[in-house]
Image (cartoon, rainbow, N blue to C red; front, top):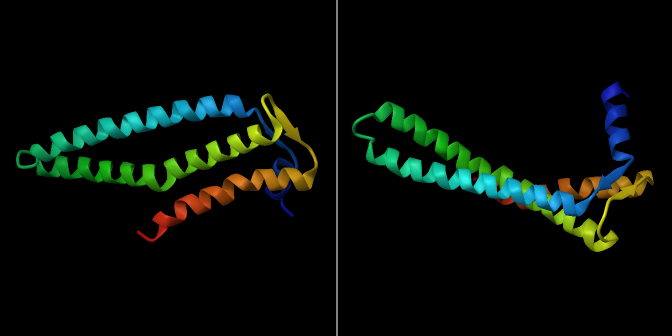
Length: 128
């Protein structure tokens, strides 16, 4: 077992979250990210109209937009959704306020939920 394996095991041995704080921060991330996506989308539409005048620059911009949009739907949005799902489950299970689980088995279960949900939510996009 390496030092990084020990670090990972130690991180999995405790689960801690204040779900209300997490939900507010996730909401801010969602709003910022989707606002950025909308801005990028409007700019891409304007860039398409300028394509004949600057094809190389516009094609690069459109490729950057396509990569950003794909990452939003395949990574960021599923990650935020899984995070919301975990925060809501912690809140529904334990109520408001900070929750800390120190039983290593229970903590590992709670720590793994996000990964499972993210994998499930993002799997629909993996083969596209």
